[in-house]
Image (cartoon, rainbow, N blue to C red; front, side):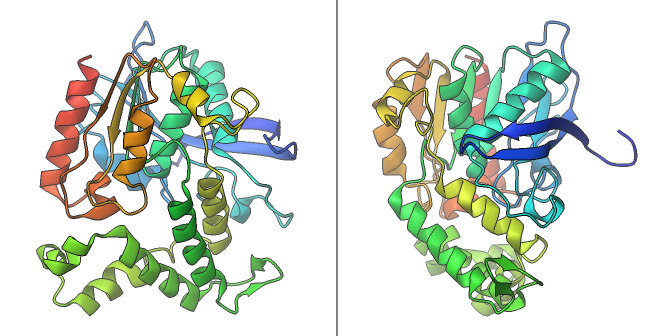
Length: 338
């Protein structure tokens, strides 16, 4: 790596699932650990909404959830996150509708063309990363040995779609949004988006029990201001909209192979599947994973282990939450032992 902590896979001109051609598409990624001679120790760890690899690598470490001394871990940055091809780095032309299927296709090329990888010991992902893990398991059943879907689902269900609509309206209500794109930073839009997220991301119990105090916030308003008002301002607003679109279009069956038949897509999965929703998550409801579990009939094994936490969706990304971290670590250790 030269001066940066990541590398770039240049995919060239790519025909997307929509039929549109994306010129000079780039996938940015980072690796951790060493690839074994048999290339059988690979963990793929896709990024979540607005996250870049540096935001989620806290999960990697010798005493963390994913151990780079045993596994070769690859974080591919999802399109629209400001590193891989995104509105902010792809010129002024309208950014095409990208899907998870497009992302997995390029990630697959990265693994095959750059590393010669034919097997994945684990695909691990939280939120949008979890949706990518689900897509991997369905699209490449012979390649994926295990998949951990943390606070994610096989498709964006209507309730989740409505939440994302509220995010879009909050962000695009800013006067900086003109003629279908942001022409400058939407200061008010970022704040409005953060306040919408604050209500959905954390649970009723989190606010009832004032768990924000455990992180050192002095009042509810202090928490909202410091934790949420500027949470998304670090990202380009057009990039955020692009990723919301990917999220809303998410559906493992939305491709030629499955023709929109979700049951057929779930039945194609052969991996050991760990569905780990947050018990109080409002984006990805436990009931959606319960429904999916019953249709994972050809998986080597399939279990549903909700994270027993009041931290809502954030239970799956417990950066400063030792209890939820310990739960994730134990569950992944058990999965990798299968």
